[in-house]
Length: 387
Image (cartoon, rainbow, N blue to C red; front, side):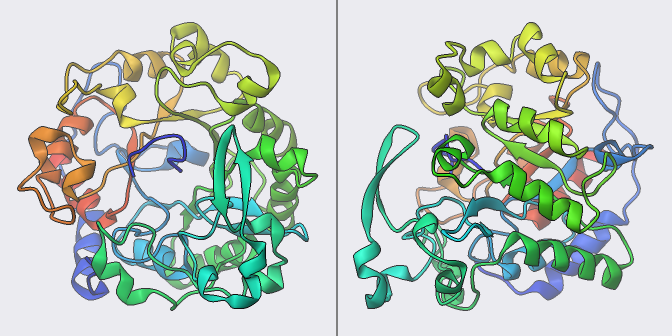
């Protein structure tokens, strides 16, 4: 997630796992917010509406502590208590398998540059209108990708995560579905995942359509129903519309900056921008084929020219009126990713007052949030629910 936006310390699992368990087990007063789900409320019914509010979603796993989109990152997110794990961003291989990578370009997330046998695969492509140079999953077979190992994507902000470079391979989506079942059995509770179709229009043009492949795997593992513990998301509304015809899963439309246009709209000549999609009319249309939206946090509370928060928009109330759940992205602990007023010092990898930022965003009535640091998010949730 987060492809269209610029928002982009390692630690042991023991203490954080205990903290996560403590938060999940914590009670607390229920806070009423106008036009919103009540904080701390345990929803009843099946599907996505059964998740706790606010929902803490491990963004690409626990990517604040481990290289993203690895089984190590996903596992740690569960250990820290995340309600849902974003596993993963889905891209295809040359031979049609689905793997979990933030982008099809893998030069920044794997050690492919250290493999001389793949030096000739480095190329430049036009990806959703942007020239990108590197190595691309669609130019590798699954067997070839399995010889690579994951590395930290933003080492300047997360130097401690580089300790784990080379430890994990690239997981397939099928491996993730098996891991989900295994963890559900071991933990005695349903594990939820939140995969995203990446650049679906781009891949469909290459003859590597994502939606049909994803649907086939979900059907194979009995996870294609309305109450299935797999929420599907995409920045391209037509991908979600396609999935809506293929599977019964809860579906979410991701929304980037207000002035941007989803790439499928660009390709088809649809002049609408995200600003059009978040009007009451646009939200009502989305509610016709999806159950939620995943807006950038700036659509919930815009920032001024200095990067400080301004007045919240009406998006939360408008979306809820349309019957949609909101899971904005992305909370991160490090200074560069926080609103200016919540930063501490100037170090790029130092933590700011992220608890203050959570409190402000939770107060808008959002139903959950993607976070690179699930343990921090759970503690912030506990603070908010307990008032």
